[in-house]
Length: 99
Length: 265
Image (cartoon, rainbow over all chains, first blue to last red; front, side, top):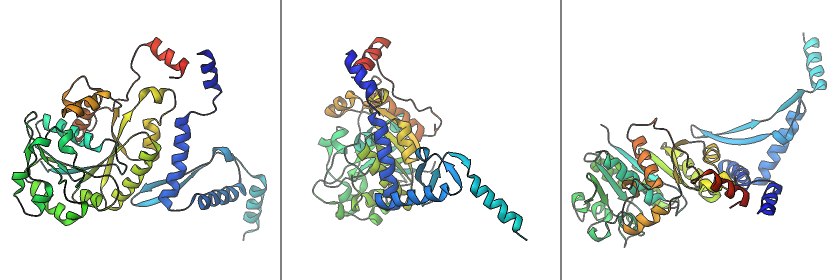
């Protein structure tokens, strides 16, 4: 009984959570009618794009497709750690040189 | 009062559409409404046997649509619950025996006589599904907390949405013990994923097997947890939208729960 308890604690993730994650990814692909591979590429590109301007926590990033008024909405939720200094400088430079 | 047609649908088979149709329809009849349930699972007739009315089937919905009898002849009046009627499906025809316009015409006629009409939809997304949703004012989508049922429910909600039919969700066969130990999608997970309005949560209940065996309604049995949940769903559809949704809880005392947590069973 105790061994089973310890074994259960050692298990990394409850199967309910695994189910939720798998469903979320499957449904995003179903709703957009894109393959998992293409969706993976979109995710990569979005992460790259955002990373040009922000330090983001890539582990916390969530992609979701919601449906409203018969349209699919891509919602990206990402924890932003900070604005990248380089991009901030670049932005102020452009502002300063602007006529 | 404006009468209303609800379609009870799920995409996936075997998640409890027919049981839900029978029990929610009964719940609303118990509160004094005039209720009709129609089985549109043509070729795989089941609602009659779930309701214990199989020995009284003479005419079917296909007979009515094809003009072989007046719709009044096909109505089977339940003798236990007042104001509850069934029009059974035909067993010898197929889904292609009828079309969407015929269902719309039939429901327009029946709406004059009933407060609420519930349509038991076949599994799948083919012609049978299209027929079943053709006349629906609202949809009741049933799922269980399983990956396959939730995925199919999502597809169904999308199809209903494209027909401008709003849907509400029932999560059926929730096993609170599995939820408590993290081995079942929670109702919050499911509503998160599907993002539609929740109509009710129904616990897993052996009593459903027993009442179905006998052709009785769980909803008339106060000791059935699923029956009570279906009754409350009926009340919510019947104007009590704000009736709180009860989350199925683990039964038994503290020590039992504790032992379950420790043994993981």
